[in-house]
Length: 203
Image (cartoon, rainbow, N blue to C red; front, side, top):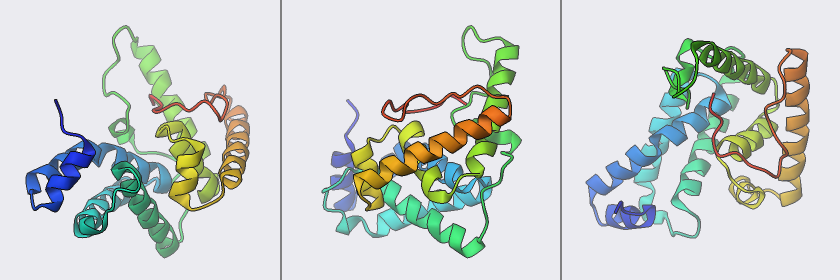
């Protein structure tokens, strides 16, 4: 049976580097995906993900276990993304690179999926990425955490240090704007109600 995050963290605190490497392998893809969806730049997202784990390793002794390890990593990642946005003073790119399949999009068709369906799914992913790039950072972050990473309203509120009502407002407003952008682009809305999270979107 695979070790839990808590067990790996405990062993890492005791100096077991292999345990920390297991944590990195377990979380590097979700952390990179989070950074990419917030800042929209592949190479910079890789840098953010790498820095996230470096900071986590250095600060591991200060991790008290009051929140899940994943939430702690998400917080570090989001802080680094905010720093990047302020430093670069840029909005996310509106056109994702051809390598978008690195974020939960298979390079080959799924079982039973036609090539036409695969192409349509990739085009949908690009349309959503373009629409997401037009949202304010706070709304985009709320949508990413809820719709892509499956966090609850309360988990997002704790992560962002803001009231629950603020999270709901950002999410509902952001989803409304996102749907309008997608409709204008001729894309049928693929996001359900905000209180029904989807852990991962397959595009």
